[in-house]
Length: 394
Image 1 (cartoon, rainbow, N blue to C red):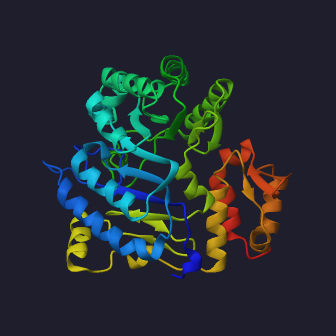
Image 2 (image 1 turned 45 degrees about the vertical axis):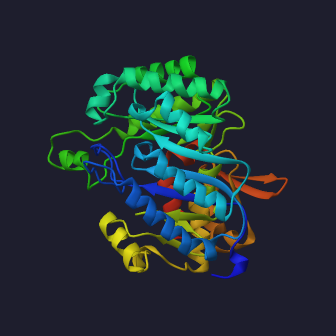
């Protein structure tokens, strides 16, 4: 990688692959040990950082995001070692967004004090639902009462300035949920806690999960795609009326609270990926670390490469262009800047999608932009397949 590919304001994503249980719908990289090896894992991350920093980072960091897994299980003393190293080596720009994911059962005043003291100014809370029956079905460790308590603490921390922002995740389309129930849940969340950011995910059935196995064996029903689409568009209406912007397919925010780090993924900005299963993007090359945690730790100890060869590549110009389209169209608020390079590969196919009412081209101060229409959002996979299958310029 050349110095020209590097630059300041990199983001760092750290994957913390430990949970106290695996939810039946989850296929993330994680394990559920009896005791979380915080010290050993932090040691490994510090070693990986020492390898990646000289070739991927040459200036202060703009964002830090701890995902998982359940980063709120991380021993704060060990987490402090990682943060201190990042600050000592390159530092952060003023006001850098620092996000940590958490589950409600770990969110206490003491935990909030510990992470805010380390500079974290944003918490992403995995609520998933306020319905106790749904939480049991989704395999969550907390109940409604626990979610309420955690949300109350985050709202208070934002009010008193300890947090700049917080987000909460909700899952919709689970078995037994109706459109009326979904409306009521959104209304309650808005009225009681006024979250500045929401991530709303349609329940999906991943093949390698417990839920996937049950659906294959006929022991559970898969989600109703039609109902899930209705729920998404109902959320668009309710949250728009509440002053929130649907800025990305699964993300809503009030002004000033768009997730800065996550926007890197959709805007093709570079970030460093640290940890087992973590992905990174240099601006020219994508990579993904060994996802088997034991093998990741062994590779670190033996000074072996971490990247998985079949997940790490120097994409050709067309693949990189399609990556830009695939991620950029997720930005529902801004759309995708339609450059000459993109037009050279996908112009004719995109215009056909425009004629079908699924894309719209709009002049903007910075150039021509293309966005998904509501119809395009409803059939986003079809739009992407039409572009992917198109021959260059045809």
